[in-house]
Length: 257
Length: 380
Image 1 (cartoon, rainbow over the protein chains, first blue to last red):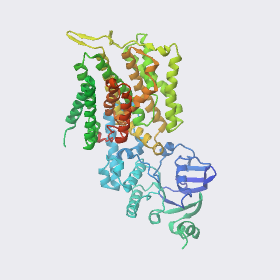
Image 2: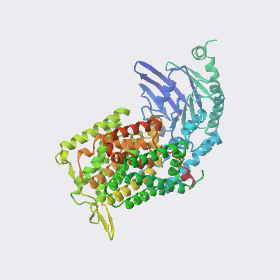
Image 3: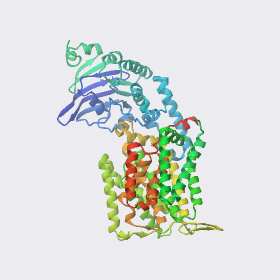
Image 4: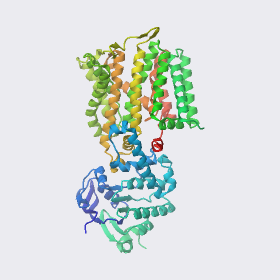
């Protein structure tokens, strides 16, 4: 069976540092993969390489069998890969709507003449996108949907995370990358956010998700398979229980008892 | 406070028109300072009562027709003072600089592309008007050509700008501005340091450099240029407003705020930077062509680095990205130094202190940009 996404011997080097060392992994359609490992083990670098934000020094990234290695970020996006960032990259001075709607880049009419002069058509497009964004926000919280034209900087941490996830979801991606979504959230918020991810999952059964997370409770609940990285190498791959039972993982990551 | 958008907009326009008129006609130094203090007090009161932001969003969210209050106010002032040459010249200069600042707002305020060579593109428009004027081409075409030549030359400058980031991009535009001036000074076809005579604009065979004579109504020829600048300013203002309230405006903002984040969501960052730069230079070029026609004469000394800084200080003082802030700030920056002639060189000092005070106490400008909300579009 062919995989939705495969990494084949992917390496990334920053000067003398081998950030990713011949990493190979496969993601099937509709699965949630958890990516764990100590700080500096190359998890975020893997996301950056996959989304075209950093150059690979070798290996191949395949999406649906086609090579996406070295594509510019916006072309990776066009093939259906979206992500969130560990330190959120939202536009704080813009409204919630603007932040989310940018994720629909490929469906927006960007012709300069029609944007400037055909305002009736533009208004219709705004209404359609507003409806879509509102509905998406409402799946997370009805309160958030009501704040669609509020400035982003007025939102708290969990709502900002939700906006980031919405921006990634509104493009209807095939592969969603979540980079440490619980960072900066309280335990209660993390718990709430877990429910959100499971909701996203049940709403989009064919979408695959790779999630980087340090929060083990979250991983146990959402990840169907876990991959452990250390020094840019894959050191374990299996179900959450199998991976955490691995004595090497326990020592390197969870600490020895 | 529940006011309809229309009443509020009319009130703002009326106060703005009145203050502008008072500042324009005031001869006495103390009257000027008084009007400025009144404007400052107004600005502080508006900020304290948080009315400033409310007004900004009212203006931002109402229909594009509210922009027509600008020509309305301009025409009222223009006709009320139709015999005052100097006042009308200042009013026209404010509108022309304001037009150039609409271009800079698109570049710097929206897409975050810094341009320290505003005066150079302004000059390109002016020199285009000077060269084409000799051939008897219709004035409106010459103005548009001024914009197009500025945009085309900007296309070349954007290449090195895109390859650099932040301060380095700014340095490239500074270098371009200086090069442009040196080029003019050594180029004899363009008149060298002495400059060139420019054919004035004409409408249906009537030169706009002649005064107006309609029955018993007599007006300064500057009224012609006030009306011309007002017309072009209003058209560009409305188009720039539509641009901001469009998907392109959303993309510009995303590119300015976080180019890396935007690129991951499919935004073609380089393309939007080029677009903003080209559209902006087009508008600056239009302004330069009108300026040259009104002055009837241009020289390299009209287009110096400090003129570029004056243009940038207008949009920064007013409120970066807020089109409505351009005219008030242009009045402050263009008219105030003229009115304070008597204190001589101290006026530069006064201006510098003003800039420092505004940046210290109102870092996002006197009239900060309002959040874009598509409420009106959704409701329709």
